[in-house]
Length: 455
Image (tube, rainbow, N blue to C red; front, side):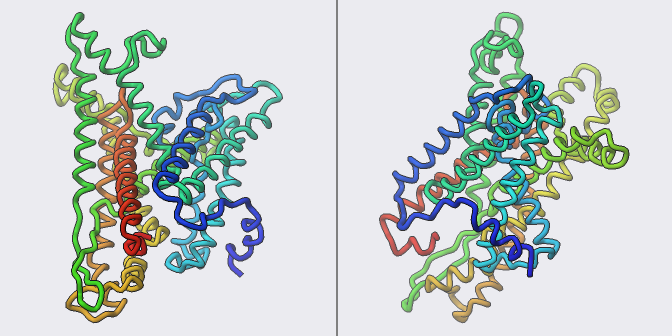
């Protein structure tokens, strides 16, 4: 008996959001998604009871990626959801669970186990945040603070399930895009003297104010780089390979598109969430002799040197290239190690995500075959379709994962005062995917026969 079968009676009794009996329709899905996003924003405004202080700056660059707001009900954000997925994917990859993610029955078991682990991790991280010093409970309030943090993440687990079954896209992507968009607009347009930490306001007010004291092009440079990243991601989403397909006895032509960003940005979400958990654990056990040293070293390797490239350019323009290279050598090395590690993990998680999401060649071949489609010039055999798809999907998954990893890492080193490159990358891709999902839903409602292909 495997682990999934052994724990089956446990995760089967967990509350579950039932699938709708029929497709809710576009308007209903938009309403459910909007409601879930509204609840997410409200949770981020409810402060924890019994809290003395919150050290937000220690995870400032990762809060938007984790859809968290330290000191509120969503202090842990989606971290338990993502971490449970990472742990189970590693167990599957190591053959310790003994399941086949291409098998629909095994995928259902995997998803049930993932929810069970996410709830356990929510409770666990409810204690980790106070113990790590990221939040400081008042005397005697540890249990109350931990329970609130756990409750917030559990609510997000079920909000994600509601969006996945009744809304558009996934709750994880929706929460990340909402948080990043709100932060982006605030950092760009914040009026002056709103906060003591940033009395000059957002980047645009800073640039306008610099006309009276000497023009400062740095805020404008940050905004321009954000626009460039936006255009790069939009262009990359349009790159695809078309595989000709034929449907029906008469052989009406069509095509199956394999996008360059086939796995979307999920590898980056998983990798960055893993980095965040490493940093949290380093705060908890950083003083231990061996484990602490390992986690501290990993923390250094998984920490983005924000604004590295602009800082290097400004420093080199005043002090010279060689002097700046010597002075900023440690930061440059850290940036290089971070970029390599992030990219490598994106490739690993990209391959796992294809298996988990039933997007591999075998799964796509089954979908095409069941819809009466085949590749012209070949026999109507599922194995032939798999063989053809294997020429495209695995290489595209690797190249796309490398691309999003490199772009996210370099974006973090370019952008600082506005948002993270990872946040912009994720938001643009998530919004683009939501647009595609809406277009597919509309097409399916207009032409029901095509709905079978998109499921």
